Length: 195
Image 1 (cartoon, rainbow, N blue to C red):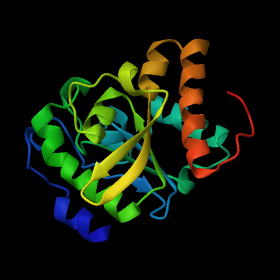
Image 2 (cartoon, helix red, strand yellow):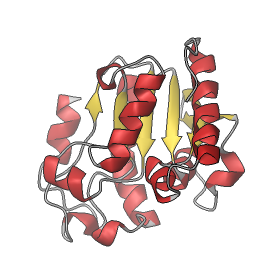
Image 3 (tube, helix red, strand yellow):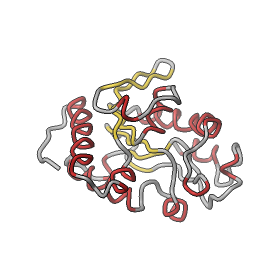
């Protein structure tokens, strides 16, 4: 993974995101032998400042989800499709995802998790290879990430920021937890609590 980090470098300019607002390349963090890999859309403002994925409010919610799974953040690997913050936290454009997503694909091929949890429609659409996919079309069931000879079970759910925007609605939280339980079942992780 170290070679991949060096290849991206701290001053990547492969797409417009490297020239717009980002302060740091936010590569990813976690256990390189993780059974579960969480993949989001891209870094936000707080992630750009700290250089780590999912450290703002959405990251705090993700940490609570991970703990509810009976795990800690250091047990999983967390990354994003794009490694630089899009301006005004907009959704990454297709060409930005195509360029930066090649690094994500290499991260996945190094970690080889037993299951990928796509956080939000942007991550799901990239990982499934169809930018027209909406999260409501794919969440709630087992899917598959395929890249060359790699095939990994994938579960898509709402992005933690969506849950926060919905005021942590019990219905939305329940849907997310049901999605997470599908991923847990795939790897044989016992559900010990309800969220």
